[in-house]
Amino acid sequence: MTAKELLNLEMRKCFDFLWETSNHVKGSKGYGLALDRSNNPSLASIASVGFALTGTVIGVKHGFINYEEGLERAKGTLFTLLHNIPHYNGFFVHFCNIQTGERYKKSEYSTIDTALCLNGIIVVDAFFNDPELHEMAEELLNRTDYSHFLFYREQKAFFHMSYNDIPGGAYTKGNTGFISAWDMTAEQLMMYIQAAGQDNIDEEIARNLYLSFDRPYGEYKGIGCHYVPSGVLFIYQYSHCWFNFSEYKGCDGIDWALNTKNATLAQIRWCREQSQIKTFQEGLWGVSAFDGKDDYIVHGTVPSKNMMPLTDGTIGPCAISGSLPYTYEESTCALTYLFENHPSMWGPYGFYDSMNSDKNWYATTYLGIDKGITLLMIANALYGDVWDLYMKHPRIQKAIVKLGMVKQ
Image 1 (cartoon, rainbow, N blue to C red):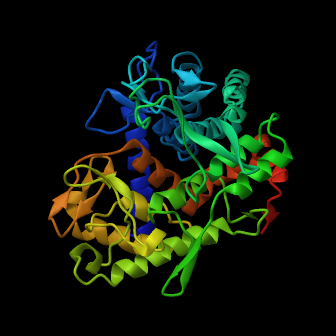
Image 2 (image 1 turned 90 degrees about the vertical axis):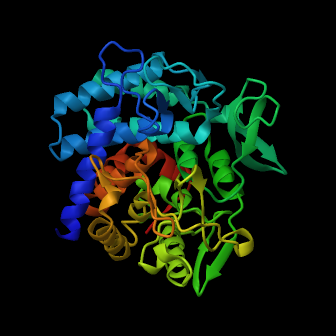
């Protein structure tokens, strides 16, 4: 099997997971909601919904499903989001029941997970020529009030990360209200783009938001990037699933596509130099957030704050695939090696979530967001599917102008 054949096979398997495991019971209040993870069939992730919606378009474009099937699923999902999912000023709860849409325990109202969902809404709106779908998409996008999560610190504008009205709720540390701030280099670039596409965020505020977060620069063995605090790879990758940063630099001149490429190359180099870790000595890399042997783990390498890598050698195909458009050769080599030498990593929906050679351990789980980023970045690397649609959407074009982005 060639590398491209493997990528196409994994793309199909990722699509199948999102399509088949999402709620497809017509009339269900949770119709269209997507699984958070395969070993918890009742839990939906609002971020997974964004990947699943985008995946629906990929499925139609590649003949996995027909146009009518895709349109039906997309419209039904938007109806569910509009009417059945709890929200706070348009921002959805992070987790909900996949059958009823009800809030899961004390889940927070999350900006970034809502943003991932909205990206999927933008893609289906760009692809399907359907007035009813467009009307629902506009209502959902307009309802999401970014200005409500906006605050200032020393004249710099920031977004709060989330909101929780339940004492002792997720991320509250015993309090209620707004939680934390997007004041560091992280996965929130998509939020500035979405906010700039709204009429109630003017050019001055949009650019202030983009320019305000910290963007420290660091290097590893001459490979430099504006790094995320923990060096976790997915954080560099998420916004690139939809916005093609290879086409535009920020108004500050930063090339975020090159930044993600360099962050990935720095990790690859660091991994190859770790002689004590068997996984890395096989030529594998992809240190990020995914299932570990005992629990969900969030690991990273370098560059990072204090240059202190955190990893036990666990890697994930989603992290390798998430950089495909920027490290095609390195990513395809690692994925091919994984496929040919670790058959326990392959299951009914393609690559499982993660593995660790040092512990002789293989995950048997699939996560919606991890199969989602894999699907989207394969489609972008091989065909430009998602980028082409997302970049043409009127809201995104408006945002590019407001943010003063520079064509590359």
